[in-house]
Image (cartoon, rainbow, N blue to C red):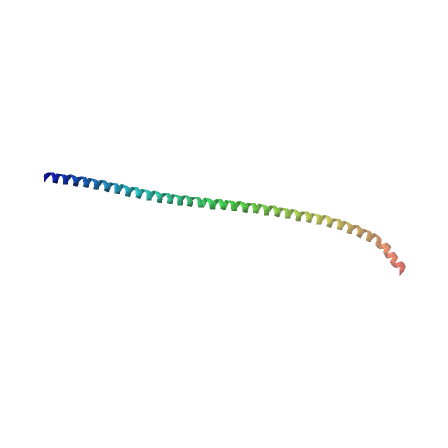
Length: 128
């Protein structure tokens, strides 16, 4: 009987030891599972964070591109305005030259008319 009791005690201790071993394995598996889930969640959060970090850079690059486009457009408009101002200035200068020529012609014609006035007057009085 003592042998049976001691066999039962040994079996109990072995079962208790096996149970403890299984529990520690279960705890280890849970820890591994938890770690795996945490790592997966961490990677997902890191990916999202990286995306968020890149978005302002992308929008900043886009803003920089838009700014450069606007700068180029401004330069084109300024150049076009300068060309228009040059054309207007040249046209005004040509008008001034033409006006000067017309004034000289008119002055010469006035001189001819004044010089011819006595002759015309004499002719008019002759025919009257």
